[in-house]
Image 1 (cartoon, rainbow, N blue to C red):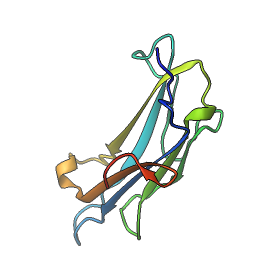
Image 2: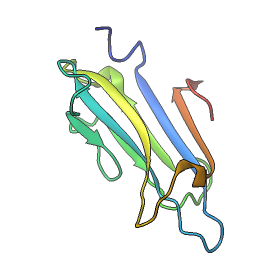
Image 3: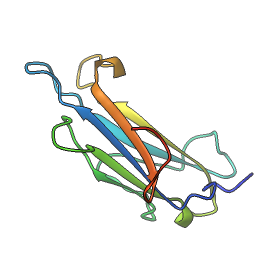
Length: 127
């Protein structure tokens, strides 16, 4: 298997969205990262990083957590230090989830979503 980092060292994943219209329930989106072992890269994750948590070794952190999408700029920011991740891990999957809070919400319900992937000042993915 090739290197997990693919030559990347420190990657930032940033998520943004606009608040729900007046009177509508707030949308709470969360960035999550699942880390898988090299010996079982498609099995159960070794650990999951989500709101209010970080990787046991500090290599993956979630620095911002918005429950409404209010505020300027990006609402959720996750940093993955791939160059520091143990060689025991073979795959990291990053995703976005919507907290349901008793309702049925889909990504079609999210107003003006955007995601950015970058390493340093180099953008790896669209806004």
